Structure formats: structure tokens, C-alpha cells
Length: 301
Ligand code: MN
Ligand code: MN
Image 1: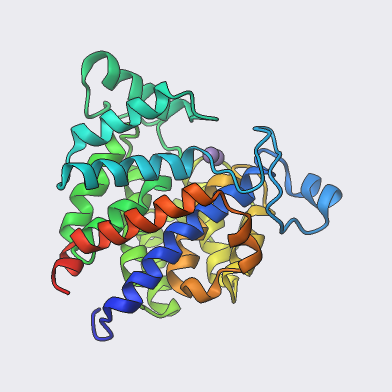
Image 2: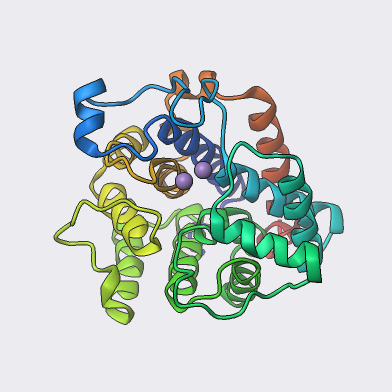
């Protein structure tokens, strides 16, 4: 895995993954909950960061996806260690700050922590939304490149709000793909990881693509895989993904982290980067640097 181990390249890919996630969130939020035919009728191909959407966002504004990932990043950095309690406290502070939106399952888990200090929500067959997967990037960065650490952190953070085997499988697969992509793996290696998930959980099979992009983590991951493997550039991956509509900010965020990690900073269109909320990008730059520096890979630099 680390034949081409290169600290400079790892930093570049990690930064592109986090910024790519925020871009996918801001781009997709405009068309969240629209159908692909409604998007086509209104925009042709939708490909600019213009804000609006059901949340009436400013151009470049991000939503819960990026914000919850930043909560995890802040908690780990300020604790200088992995602290589930600190992550839950950051989620609680964020929820109290009246965020622009918050998924129902996430809200339920955060409320349970605020009321009872609960750090693990009970197993629930209905909690198979994408809310745990969408905040996997800081977990992948901080555990880089240790798969055992990734597994522990991924499941712990997921179970704050989502305790479900399908969600868990998606989180772990996504985390492993992020590790691989950030370390410079080729697309066929990433493809093997996605195919492995579909072998263990056939529901994730994404070919032929069914065109569903809902917040159900299976639909979300099928959409991300389909467009990530098909796209030849960061832009193609994201435009294909968000034009499916439905949970477009979250499919955009997850595809953005993978495509960012794979294509690196050079692949991110300047016209999109310029539209982004500058304070968010500045914080992303700082936390990415610190998470990677504190990871097993970073401590070995
Ligand atoms: Mn969102
Ligand atoms: Mn969403």
C-alpha cells in the first residue's frame, strides 16, 4: 500500500478530499430533494455553485455534512486524542447553535447524548441512513494508514447516531477507500474495495446503476460508486453525482471526498474553489494539516 509513500502527496490528497467534500456539499445542496428530471428541466446539466435550494443557502455555503465532519475534526484536535465524549459534545454544541439543517437520525442520537450522556445508540434496523458515512473523512485522516484504528474510530463515531450493520459496512468501506486514495492507489484498486463491499453485502451492487440517490446509505453509496468510477475528472464525478438529485448534498459530499483524494488539489476546478465560504476552507486547511500530522502516517514523517 505504501510503495509510493510520499508525505507531500498525502497532504495534497488529504486537503483535496476535505475541500472536495465541502464543494460537493455546497454544489449538491442547491438541488437536494429534486428529481433528476426536475434538475434537467431547470438547469440542463447543473454544474455551478449558486446556493439557493430548499435551505436558501448563500453560494458556497455548506450544510450539516461538512459541519459534522468539522465537529469530529475539532474534537480530535482539541483533545489531542480520540475522544468519543468530545465528539459528542461538539455535535451537541453544533446542534444548539441552530444549524441550517440536521438529519432526523443524527438529531435523535445527539439528543440522547444531551439528555443521558449516551455514547452509543441502540442497534436499529431503520438507522441505515447516510449520516454516519458522510462524516467519515476526519476519521480516515486521523487513522491514516492504520486499518484497525480506522475500524475502531469509524464504528464508534457512527454509533453515536447510527447503529446499523449496513451503515457500518458503508462507513468501513468508504474509510478504507479514502485511506487507499489518499496514499495514491489506482482506480482499479479502489474498484476492488467497492466490489468487496458488494460481495459481502449484495445490496450495495452498483451495476447496473438503478439511479436512486436517496439518503438510504445503499442508494447513496451506489450513486457515489457509479459516478466516481465513471468520472474521468473531479468535476465529472461531482456533476454526475449531484445531477441525480435526491440527497444530492450528501452524495456530493461523499463523492467529493473520494474524488478529491483521488484527483488531488490539481483536479479541483478553480471556479468552484473561489465560490466556497472562505472561513470554511480556511478551517478545513488547518484541521486537515493537524489531523494528518497527528495520524500514524504523520507521526512517521
Ligand atoms: Mn446536508
Ligand atoms: Mn443531505
